[in-house]
Image (tube, rainbow, N blue to C red; front, side, top):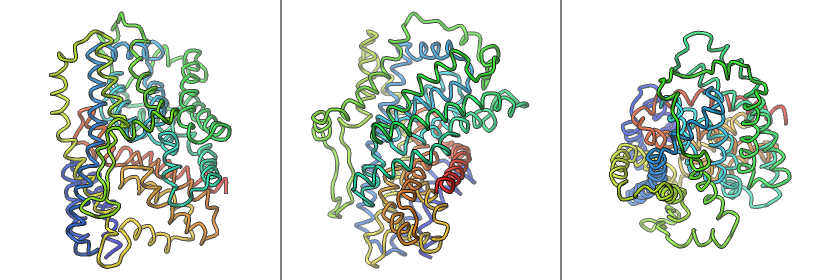
Length: 530
């Protein structure tokens, strides 16, 4: 009974959203109700602990909503000033081939945003940009979510390693050993991610092509494999010689420049990427002939400012300290329960940076922020359904996570599930370790929280089974990153940005394909390097 109950947050959302195609609001509301009932009657969690967890879930919605609002504000500001149109033209001048654009925008630019920000921000930034390039909403959301995976292992300046592994080890040498195992394993598994993205776009997502899909995929496969390999090798050397904290910052910058050069000089690319580029759906003549007097630098300057403002505090400790203390709307020990807390540091939030840059963008282009008020109102209205889905999702997550506050002397549901798996699947743990990491991210919505929750169990199993501890923890970290693709609250957030709310089940079914493939590739990598 306890095993079945502890699997509710995994099985019920998959069935309701993935099989019955329910919206996230309905599916996650049912999941939350079931978890609350089970917590009371099976786990003996008192009502006040349930209430504290629900308040925690509601409060945790606010920082995500703030990032979502900032992302939507920046998008509208870029549209309002014509910057998006100019960026579109810039990409079109480099390449009109959407197979290549997907790698440049979703994977490489998204990885850079992940490296300096994290918190689910990358997909919320890249999905709208893909739509302006002509990608359909389903394609934009799926590609943005799947792309936000490889870089997540190191996240915002190494947070999944530094914070995520803190329950398993605080030893700097051990943290470096785990991060080195991550980049080693990714020399195989990570190399295939750009190709997975391109295959998704061409073969599995709707397009104008009804035949020769595989041919369209195979002809740019050498280029995507090259980009993946260069990314993996660059990450390996960055981690080795600079450190894991900057791996997801340095790597995408280097590879983005490399990728643009290979496109310009047509390296490992067929001629038809220029002569007859692959386009998901026919574009109108009007779109193809768009012109702009704005410089490409001015169009991209808002994104440059976003990256700069996000990375600046990481480089200067006094600024970081100020941002993390000036305006603190966090709540601690809700209803007296120690550890049931929720952080919201306004100035340190990526949402604040996105909002600030959106205002600067309007001023740079001499557009009145006051005249922009109607856009702000539209944004607020458009967020309603997204916030509803986020609230019920996070309530479910927090009640599930906080079931350690019970009168039956039981461990929490996630720890019970992990311990059960460790006891019964000890002999095949190298295959299970990344799956547990992915499940953790799917449920909690964070690769860092997944690793923080399960790293101590992973370390104990490694010791008991005589396995390489660094290898097992690396599998947890990468598994957590993979789980980012299928995380319900990430799907809800990105759908909200592009106006695709209510289609979460459709997105989940698409992102599940590369997530499973990535885990299989990771397991193969583990046994090769073991």
